[in-house]
Length: 316
Image: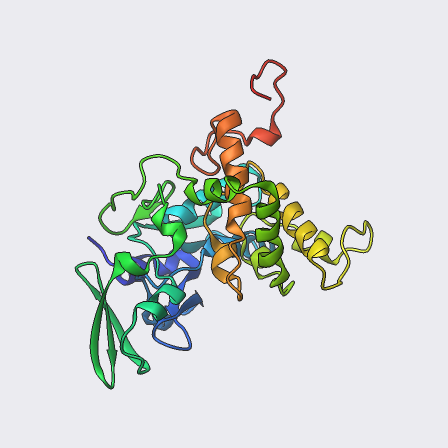
């Protein structure tokens, strides 16, 4: 099985750009990497710390780059390929300009869960993975933590750990953690009495900073240049620090993703205050599944339900 580095070395002359991950400001953080020189391929890494969904960069990169015979290579996890499929379906990405490197994913690490699981608080100097263990090296010794115990919430409900769309798949297939769509967290909130549910979301959204990280990280939120959150014409929300305005932004964001959200969980991952904003989109995905038996980004040949009209369809 070829490694990521050897595959890119073999095909580098065919590529204009490689989008992958590299170690960030500390060994426990992987950040997006944009490689144009062969000697920089050594920066690229692939492991359970590589959380960012890199498909988010494709619409703007392909739009701004001059079309040539060379392609843009992008590394995508299984769930990330759902996002790419949705972008292709809606015409935001030209599939022919991409070299998609699919990577079967065992799940990504939740930094908060990892911080709680650690017993050794010394700064980490090196990270390695072996036999489903996350091995942390520090000046105070080595600590082994089961990977399953520190997985992100999105990964614990993942149904597509293996790439659904790729030019090449590097690595062995990974068993799915769920055989069927799971909306346990959504149903737990839905089961609350109405007033309790309202109070829950008021508490959560009161902490929102209006930083729009959730919007910026979303691969399918493609209208950032004319986002309602910063629009004066039309004016839907204000910049007031009120729960009402925050709630309105998150509701409209979720509705814009109805039938489109691929449940990649990036919105929740990047929230600096830990608001479970992905629950809004998961609720939309649950409704799309119930009404149309549709899962966004799973079937490249399918048409998103809100792009069709059939007077004979039932359940509406």
